Image (cartoon, rainbow, N blue to C red; front, side):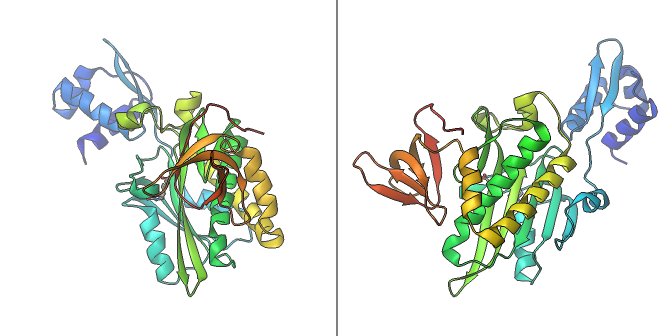
Length: 330
Ligand code: BTN
């Protein structure tokens, strides 16, 4: 049993009452500074403690663990769920990509409590600490031609944004193509990777990183003010299970609408939630950045940017920066 596990065992046996640092150091046969260090390590894993001088420490809450049985009981019926739950992995995205290559079916869903090499868009790292967020990837096999793949990216953003709004009541918005923002800071990212053969889309692997109960200390300083969590933005913690179930409920429903009616209704929903359209933006997706006004989406899901010279440029991927403060929330 590790020191952290022994410490937890003692604090749990104390049933939420305070136990002094001195008593803990005696029981664990280590210094009081070492006790404090173990408490800090456990805090990083999502445990919360109260620490009061002369009284000591008490365990306030344990990190919520996801439970596959409970998830399956709540996920929408009629979808071929095949869930793999991992305590820790490098990246759920890599696992689903491999499962897809091995012939896995639509509905394959891999969830991890922590990722050691979580991947973001454009080769960036994704902060994925244990039990504080939702880190999952799943497989979809839409019957669409390859150029329409960006439509799925936008559909995913709508599903996630609506789920956050529904569960938390917070006014999340979508920054093109599929970042979810709260108060201008990113609380959720979506990575879409696809495979094609002879211009035919074989599958897409959608990786969703929802930063739910992370504190500011979970992020490197350079991301402060850019990346955030639902907890940091609202001061409240939220159930990851509720958020995951609602995201999947929204996704299954929107995917059904997309298959029956096409992209048009999804586009309307995306436009109503977006914070990008009608703003002056700079797009970085290659050597030369494009600047102009975001004026709409085309039928494939590309962003239409009107430059100062009056040209209409189609942008299929990239990172955008808003140059004015005006937003377009409908
Ligand atoms: C982005 O950069 O906005 C996309 C972030 C996607 C992160 C998720 S977390 C689950 C899945 N596994 C990964 O390694 N990345 C995605």
